[in-house]
Image (cartoon, rainbow, N blue to C red; front, side, top):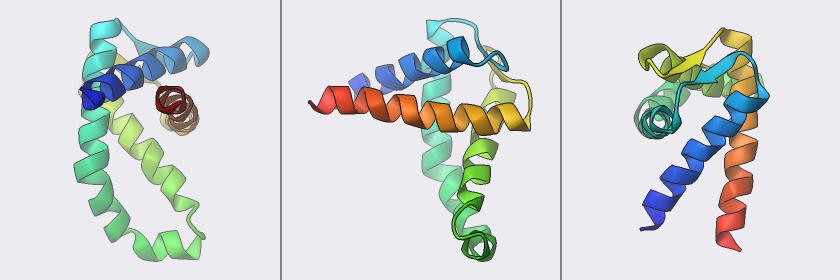
Length: 112
């Protein structure tokens, strides 16, 4: 039950990000649900592999390269889905940061 609620909150977070940022588009709530699911799967499967492969670069940049990895995963999700679009790399960077902040805030509301 909790996983379903987190999934819905992440979809709402994507809708909020799309409302705030003009370079990110979400077609509907259904598209946001699918995009949240795909983002979760990419973060669980692809991102750890990318972190492992880019570990030396992440160490040299004192972890700042993780922002780039988050943006790449966000951009990848926007590239493979029809109802979720990210207009470029810099929109992906800003979108990933805002998405993280909004989804953390919504999860905090859920915890309290």
